[in-house]
Image 1 (cartoon, helix red, strand yellow):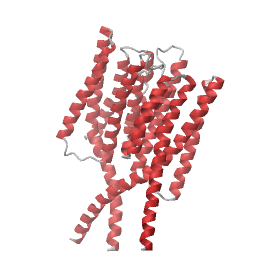
Image 2 (tube, one colour):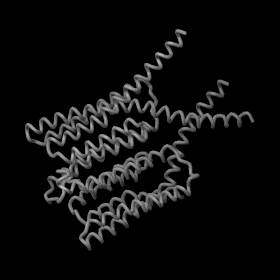
Image 3 (cartoon, rainbow over the protein chains, first blue to last red):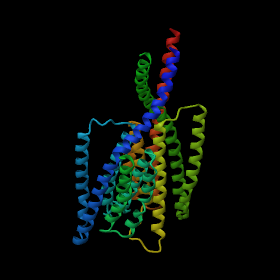
Image 4 (cartoon, rainbow over the protein chains, first blue to last red):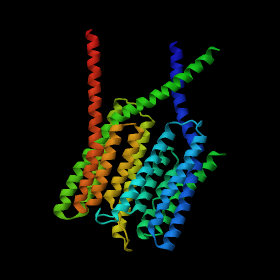
Length: 199
Length: 220
């Protein structure tokens, strides 16, 4: 009986370790497509916003980002509804929490940033694009570290560089900085993950 | 047949152990996280007060370099705290790893934000916008603290983060110069010191309650 318990405890520890590693692999197998989807959606939206803002000289086109969030959210929700039998684990929960929190804080930063351009509300202006790029980089970095994926971690650090570009060239070209960031943070790592794990 | 049964039992037990391990890890991590939050919170409050005071009397923003000293002191104290935990042989699990990764990512992003903010101020090619470093770091603290609270499923931390986020970000955008430090002070007090103290107080109360109950049982 005692022997059986010992074996069970050892097996349990081994199973825990294997399960956690398997969870990471499972997440990686399914992570590529959502990353590419959100990355491309962001790139397309930023290109459209840049073109419309430049041609009309009206920054109100930035409202298209909210439309993008709604479209992205609806597609992701319908996809997860179809794949509801797919098992979830601790790592998938952490990543879901991280990206939902990013969405929430991106919204807060956008609202506060817009208000800050009115000097009667705040004395300091908050450059929305730069802050959003830094928040994207922070969440990407957490994703890379949790999944222990060197490519995602390295690309997340590199993706923050356009934040300086957004400070130097405000206006329509700010959206191009977000386009470059999402390319480095979402699209390229997504393609690499798909190639690695779909073999 | 017997071995097959044993294996089945082991798999079921394993699932139960995994579930228990995650819950146990979350509980022990909440206690450890509360102590870390309290330590960093006190450091942030003391440093921001000192910088605010010295900046206002000397009119030099170079006193902000004290943040580097604070980071060094904090990292040293953290290491001491963790080595004490290791001596007590407290198990380290994936929840610990995740929390560590969140704050490592925050540290890296803050460093980049400070670098970009300084570049924007001193760049030879004048930039149209400057990055408000205090407000940006406050937003990053809020995001990291919110993810930590949700991973630990701790309502105390998440409530304090919501209140602190509004107060500190607003304060950082309303004030410029030495007064910016009030935002950092608020962030340290509301998002770190307050939840850390509440969690530790609750845990101490629960422990004394359990000790009291076991004492009564022994008497009976």
